[in-house]
Image 1 (cartoon, rainbow, N blue to C red):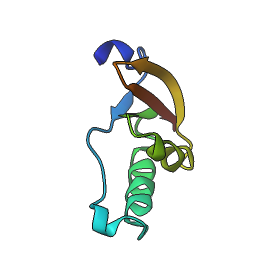
Image 2: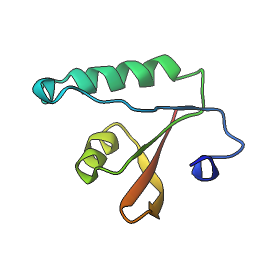
Image 3: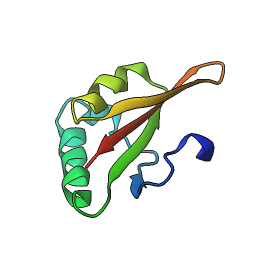
Image 4: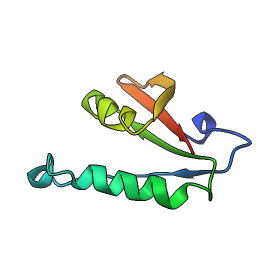
Length: 84
């Protein structure tokens, strides 16, 4: 996956984040994402993450993440970035 990550930019890479299915829809994920964005603003240039779950795309997009690369590994894999 390293070959698809941004080059020449100082970023934080979010790896395996999620909310327990019983707690989804309670704004825990949104609060967590806002804390991450606020914490790294002014410290990094961007936040990167990946997902293969299409339903997660709209969640990340509402926080300003944009798809910068898609890959087909027998399933669609989306690479997203949020510039700080």
